[in-house]
Length: 108
Image (cartoon, rainbow, N blue to C red; front, side, top):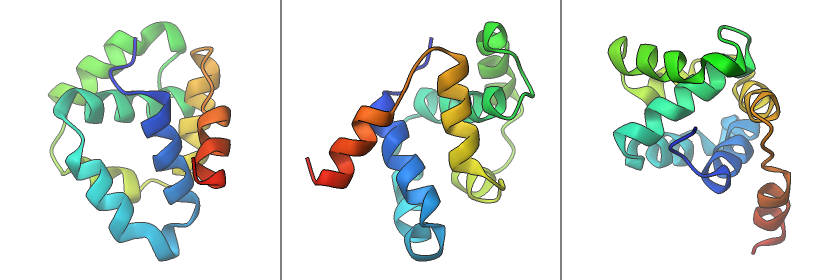
């Protein structure tokens, strides 16, 4: 399973949607995640863009951990459609960040 909460993923999704004004905040947020959270985030994005199937999450995480050559924030921020891929990855895993996103938008 994922080593990052849907709440944190929701925060990243919202910042990624506003990348023009929130890139610094998004970069700092990702950089503060621990290694397991960063690995899960990359794996989730890969599942969302169909590089791995949902059933291959463990393999995606292992690949993300072993092939990390650039800072995770640089890699993810440079990925087109990051927020869409993260949402699609959650959907593929039977998870949703919609309630967390709504809570964040409302300021809660």
